[in-house]
Image (cartoon, rainbow, N blue to C red; front, side, top):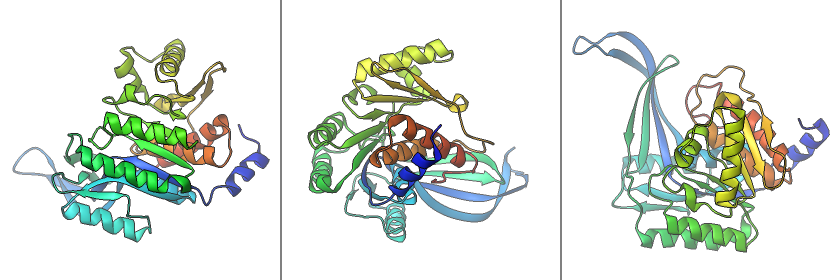
Length: 315
């Protein structure tokens, strides 16, 4: 728990923070309507679409979370030279988010996840994406963009969805730049680059990612403790925060007692995007001077709120 007085102090600092978000920029598309009947062509529901729209997804959803928290995001990543890329750029302009960190790769698709939702029921998801690593020349341009803005930043978030923007060499370079400039650097990892995220401020894997990389089940309290300690040792992170779904979160720090915080979700409608909200809020709170326990408590509460909404919703 956080005392109300301290919470208000943290809240007053929730502005004028600039955070770079480097990673896989995505669009989330929605076809939203209702099922009226079963198709005569195949045993599948027919969704009568009432609304069609796009939101930020992936690393871009982290950026919009930072904006909603009162900060200034600097998204750094790649989109394609396609209609989806134009939609992505128009959303940046709509939210008055800086566009100078977004580069166009003529050889790649803009990553789009399109969801068909009937009422509150997710029917199907359609993905358009390129998964290969970006060219070294593009990675170098992303590094240059970071270096040009590093003095103005309060923190850096690496948001990895294994869509190719975060190459092993780019990860190592960004972490090195952050540490040399004494900037907070936090990571929301995926499987492929998991072990490359060494020497960061905060490492935030979920239960499945941890199980996959460590080759163990994470079910019991003993499992959770063992996994968290192994991650601290492997990655030399200052903090490891393991998200456990309905079991809440577990926080680990070297030579400190493990901390457990139960979930704050009152009714779970959709867990999509909750991890983006956690990493955004955690990093933002650390920038305000909150300690890691306070930051984790606030982030856990924020994740509980977005889980009550259907679809990708920022805090």
